Length: 344
Image (cartoon, rainbow, N blue to C red; front, side, top):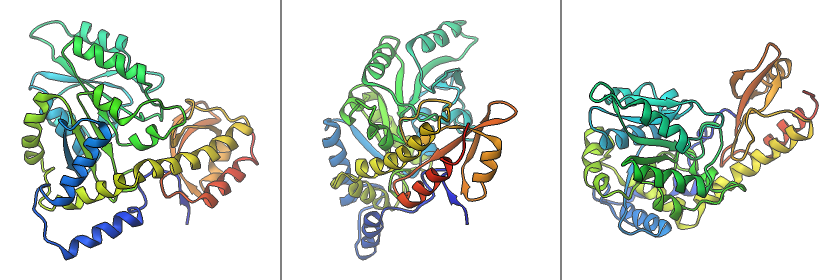
C-alpha cells in the first residue's frame, strides 16, 4: 500500500484527543456549545489571543467556517475578494456562490493578497448600482501554496481594510503550520489584533475534526451565532468539538504537533535542495511544491501518493507533498533517500 503525502488530514486524531473524546461517554453535558469543556476551551483561546472580549465558536470543518463567516458578514449585493488560488474559490464547490455572493479573484504569484491588488478590485467595481460591492477580504495562513503572511503584511492589510470599511477574514485551516514555521513572526495575539475574524484549524493539526472561529468585530459577534445555527454548524453535542480544542491548547499540543509536521517537511526540503530540484514556490510550511521530471514522478507514485499540482512543460510537473502531525520520520526519510537518487 502506498504511503500518502497527499494531505494533512488522512490520520485520525491525536491519542490525547481520542482519549478525551472517549471520556465524554461517561458524562452528561449541556448542548450546543454550552458545555463545561467548550466554555473552558473558549476561555483558554481568549487567554492565548489576549482578548477576553472576543467571541469563540466551534464548527466541524473549514468549508463550513468559511461559508458561515462570509454569509454572515455580507449583504446580498456584496462580494468577497480572494486570491485566485484561495480555497473558497477553487476547492469548496461554489459554497460561497451558493450563499449568494460573488468572489472577486486576484491573480498572485505566491497565494497572498496585497493592498495594491485589493485597491484595484475596488476601483474596478465602482459602477453603482450595476456591480457588486466588495466588502470582505479573504486570506489564508498558510495559503494554498504554503506561503505565510508576515506581521507587517497583515498589519498593512488590516489598516487598509479599516480605511475602506472592509472586513478582513483569515482562514486558519493550516494556521498551526504557519505559526510553527521558522519564517513566521506572527502570534495568535497579532491575529486577534489585525483581523476582524479568523479561525484556528484543528482538522489538519491533530483534532479528529473541528475549527475554532474567533471574532473580534462587534457587528460579527452579534450576528454570527444565528448563521451558525441556520447553516447547520451548531452541533447539539458541541462538547465533541470543545473538548478537542481544550486538548490542543491545554499543553501546547497545537504548536508542538505543527512543529512535527514542519520538521518532516524540512527533511524533504533538504533532500530536494541537495539535489537541486527547483520549487514552484519557496517552501516554508508543511506544503511543498517541487518541480520534478515526469519519469521520476511515475516512479515515486508506485510507492507514494501525492497531488500532481501543475504541468510546467512536456517533461516536468510540479507536485504537492504535504506532511502532517502524524507523518512518521522513517517514511519521510525513506522518501528523502529515494529523491536523492534522481537529478533534475
